[in-house]
Length: 491
Image 1 (tube, helix red, strand yellow):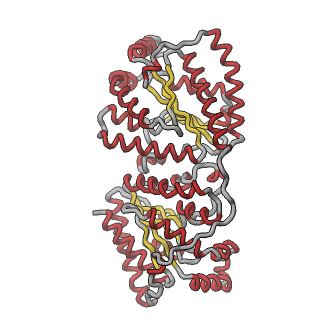
Image 2: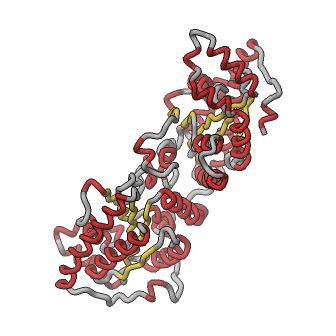
Image 3: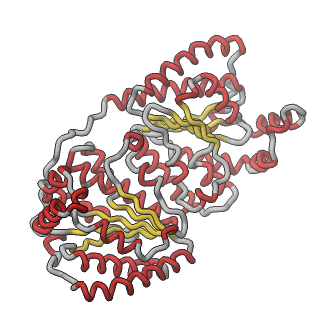
């Protein structure tokens, strides 16, 4: 792969000066087109140390409108980043539609460096690459134009360049011990990098290897590549279909998980009052054990309006220390959230090690409300199942326990609770026109939930469907399940 970037390409000073004027104009015009489009872009500048990555970024920032760009030079991870899954810090850097981000260092850096220095096994390295391919595929489908540039320079030329800089009193600050450390590992780094680039060179996110011996050739080639990729990506997004923005109707199978539930299950108030504090104490003890093992916990709650999600969550948090948890109530996405890939708003709230995040509604909205209301395309909700599975697998692999609860009530019980909300002053805020509209689509929601369970109840992230006509029964059942599953995960 790198042989094509070792042929000695160069550009004369005169031609460079002439080409730059036209290229700058074209870059700025393409950047304007991006700002008006439904796309964002991430530019990755990778390559061997000493190939001129920083200089390339600095030159780009001179040529484009820096107000539409966020530049991130990624170094050692912070404590906050270490305590979350590896991809968390990269999700946070995804720019909104119309803007671009330039990454000096990327999600490729750690696996390539670790493999070069024999810090990870081949199987782990390959798994990293597979996760990257999935991640980039999802970004591309969500309108992120990926421009991956690898600056390459031959070993002998790299050593010559570094020695020259090291012997220059005004330039030697540019060379560090770390740079020489990589020079010593050049051959292995090259081998590992070729493997990584080959495995992740996809149609949706291709690699562009740039010969970096001559800085003028390097800069011109980088600029031309960015222009070409941006134009192609913007044009491709124009041709995509838009969400229907009208409700879809679905029918559940005649026999399904909801038809097997016993909605008559009940716990009397006296028994409930006796069991609740006992289970809350056990939950508190389970959380303490979890913290000793440096794990964290995510609880997901879904279900019809008025199913009792909020009340159940309050019985859980009643057993916890306030500094150990966050409750995220998920509503319609904000403009900031709409401007980024769907899962972005959920990645940003992931718990640190030893902490708990409770989602009152979640990323499953894509295959429930968005699917039913027509807020996403058929392609978006259909591929969401595999994207969600990949997301939850990454969380589990990091040590996050994931438990998902669906509180189910019958249509008649929902109607009873709606009427109670209407007539109880301090509950009236809970009932809206949207609740009544959703009620009219009760069967569609059940149908979509059945498919959701079938496709996303995973060994490492199971669904628990709880009959919740009796609030006391549902609360006790959820607490018992959390305690049981935490014990299983903390062995």
